[in-house]
Length: 267
Image (tube, rainbow, N blue to C red; front, side, top):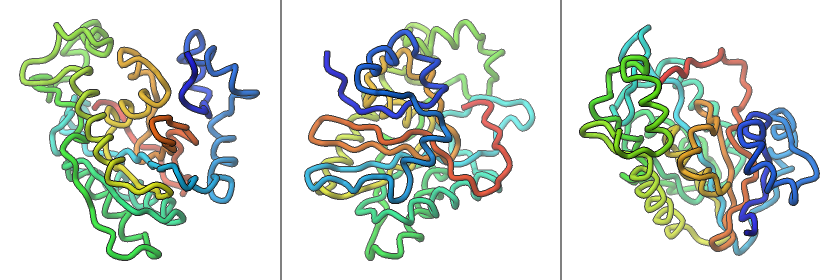
């Protein structure tokens, strides 16, 4: 099977998939780049222009949130929790980074933490006029159902592991499974691409699990392994699409503007 994406792998991704994806990627790569190397070689002028027949998507995860459990980190999923002050600053930094790229569209999850980040992107697109936010319901975060408000320990680590591995028999009441999430996210993803013209770039501001869905599809990582993908708060991932073929330019790179490390303890 041919590899569908040209990959720039972070060290963490390479170690997480050393027996699967990394082995397949080795036929296409002469070197696996570290997070720092990606930052130096894939940003600014080093990122090639969008091909006239391609479409470019920047995936942005929202910034740090105020966990509804306080110091007791609980799952919140699709609950509409607020960004922390640091999370707002992270979103502003991501928007400032994307200001160097002319975007034709900005898409967002309907949740306020993503909408804030999307508006920060839009307000910094000085070279683009009449840029409006397009909200797609399919980019909403995973619905944790009755697990919302509980810690991972209260749910059970073994049960959480089975859920992440796509065992749909342990889907929480009133929630959704990982396969169900992947299906609706990729439907919204196809809608977003259909609204773009070739040769243009756009941005999707969403969530951890949503970004994992899109990125795992591009990297051909099975859904039952996608939770191994690291996606930092307010980080940026770039994927080009030539027809149905994705090319991952860089992933989960966070603009370094001197902010303290975010707390990313539950989702």
